[in-house]
Image 1 (cartoon, rainbow, N blue to C red):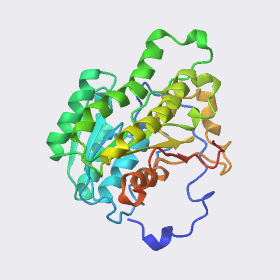
Image 2 (image 1 turned 60 degrees about the vertical axis):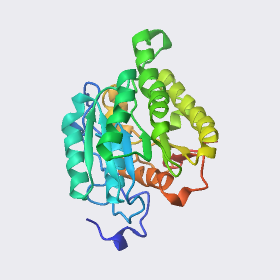
Image 3 (image 1 turned 60 degrees about the horizontal axis):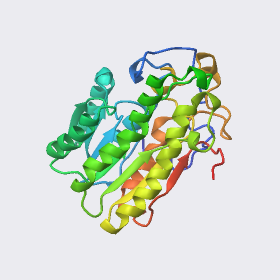
Length: 299
């Protein structure tokens, strides 16, 4: 574990390496275990301070990338975690579950597909049963497939992207809200693509814009019940999403180098945003989209 004093003042340009990933390809959904170079999920650096002590969180897409980093950070901040992920991601999920257990927190693993409406209901029920309650929800699962032309986006791809990215959030929130007491939180994952849509990510980017809108409307609806809703909008973050058809292979060596910091972000750099929006420190923050994107301007 890193010493807190060593993390106090660091140049953000060089805190993490500027990577030039080799061209590579993985079948969906992609694994952290097979990624080159490996991601930094905070395994060796994230130091908790008890900001989420006693919290009970359900995190979707928590086997790898941003979801994994968030799950690790939540555990080190004192939260118990229910992990939702695809069955094909079991290898990554077990690695993260072990890290949560090492932090002394309870973890339950809930494999399944959030594209399935029935699973969206059952994953909430299973999380509540396994954690003996629920007071934090992180909707992070996502699907991204690049396509050069709108003419090549099949109905199957279009529907699947919408099912996973935005309809699942509706369904999981709908199932979770009756279980959430005042003081509970919901954090949705959107993207820089909601503001600066890449031409090759039309379906993905449009779902992320919908998540921004969903977050702001839901925050207003649930505020009188004492439930806060916010979102995090990552920029170019190095995760298995990028190599499982999320980006063209030839674009990977330069991934993230168009940011003002000149590098891609690492999943662990996202985790503090989710911790902040879940903690009581953000008690007056509702309907906000917190951009973590290396300096790319957003509205």
